[in-house]
Length: 578
Image (cartoon, rainbow, N blue to C red; front, side):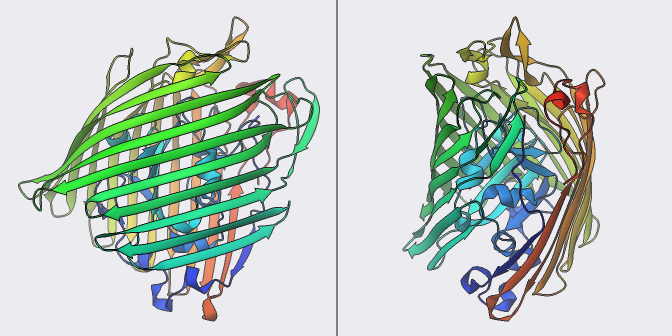
């Protein structure tokens, strides 16, 4: 019973916040007009054209122009992305390329300033990131579609989303407040303070809404409704001192949901999710060609999950230690290699379960220019969770820049997702039981892209083809809902995106995605996602710092989901185009 929050997909936004949009008119689109540097695909700065990935960059200017109040709204306008929630976790899932089978976000890896943000109990309860991260602290967001396990390991399956925060290069302070329908109100502030040999940047946010009316039929075919009241408090920081970096994020979310299982109980059920992330990193340069980085990353998630007749907690903690070496051989071969150990532990209350494990990984990637217009790359990562055979995820690609404006990418990548502790050890029959014999999910993806990058026009056309094996899904076994490896999924599609900036005031943006998939039984559209997505926007900066923006998002109809689950259409009507 995945649901989408009702929203006005046709939006008109007028902003009179000069400090947020304009310093001088010439600053508008500065990030787009200059050669954008990204770091997510290779863990080092390089142009979007040279990076080994299918990449979209969303800037702070774009975020403010279209009035996004949280990360979920930002990503809703990104190419090939579909955001949604479910009867239990509202606004929790980012689906890339039509890949979605559960209501946890475990096929996309989230990063803040390049450091992983993981929820280790079930692998993808990301309400805090999607609805609470302080938008005012975001400098830009790098979205890599396709496998990224070579450098990031488990979860970098269908893609990677890296939130890059602002740095304290100069003094800055911002504050905002607003409100809307359904009793919605919010407020936030951001401060950047440069210091000798470093700086401190931080932001905080608070929001509350009385919620929209949720009406549906549950699995017993009983009708019910409630108001989805929600609120959050969050804080994020990005600090530097010489070669030392500190990144932190904390969020406390309160929501009202149907239940932990899709049935209505008396009244609405509260859900509380607390998320914390902290990273300390140190990078030392030996010379202009070689450096080493060391990071210690902490993640913690506490999920107060409503269960009938009990107050349950699902707590997860991850401590990731990682070392990375960056280098250059013969002045033309770029190398990155490293390894990590990730200790994960969970606590399930009241089941009194405390499973833990350590995941090890080792990775290496190299690229070089075979000739002036052709770049060749290759890499691999070895993943080794406890009790599961190790797996190697390779990566290879060719990137050609035929002219200063035109180029293409041919990429192949594999990714790996190890089962999470909740999937293997959770024990709450008949609601849900874990399966200790689960195998990891694996995916192979081919990408072919042609792109044009000029001062006025930035566009690309991408074809992707993916094959998934040993997918982890839920099934009823001996009367209990449990996790199983359900076989294969084949998907392919086209992604067209572009931006036109004829001058410093006007911007036109748009994307179109077509995707189709089938499982090992020949069932088409097995992931319940729309086959067509069309997203278009126009933004204009007038004098006195006033911005007018219009954005429209269209989602096509889904396929015949009755072939996957015959009871779905008996309970709720099919989704229409939006």
